Length: 115
Length: 118
Image 1 (tube, chains in turn cyan, yellow):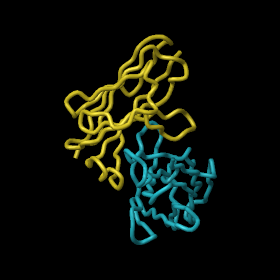
Image 2 (tube, chains in turn yellow, red):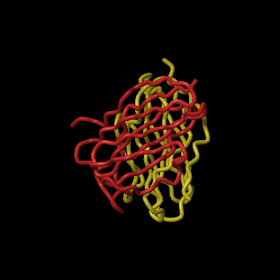
Image 3 (cartoon, rainbow over the protein chains, first blue to last red):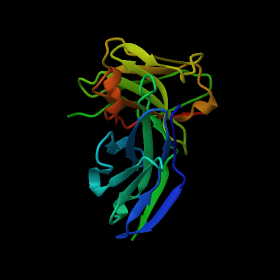
Image 4 (spheres, helix red, strand yellow):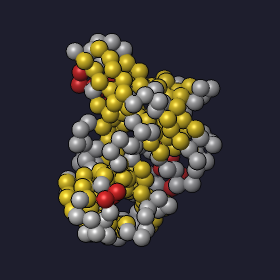
């Protein structure tokens, strides 16, 4: 069965600095990878996804993520963090070999951007 | 385009009571999901519908949880009787595709219902 690990419970960065939120995955087939963001008392908002093709995926709000097959990673990045980026970030994966194409989420990483 | 709608947004009940949540997915979306998100954890799939049929309910505690999507549009999730450990946010999500095309399709989430069981 597929799984996702987000090794950092919290990431702290200063406004204007680059940010990285880490994600690693495990699947039997091909991975389909997603990043979502959750603000307090809100549902999850889709940021970006990797299905196939270019390893660097660009998404909403200036975020991007790099798919690395050899390291089984899909880290979320942004060149210059904003205070408004502070939120809870979830990485999720679907396994092409899994019946029903279930989306499995990591435990989440809190991002805090300080001015 | 309207998003996924859920109600109520908040619910407080006592243990052993029953509760129901409602979800209306994005218009035209064939696949609907219910997730349970316990504080400090990622969402966990409870049940997946394709139109009005169940695709995956392997993680649904069927002794107390039930869900239906009778006309293939909106859905209800019920807990009866509730336990303390059911305190969580219940998220509904939908995506347009069905079958194998679900794999690469984006899921869109509603705002969730925060359930507190006392």
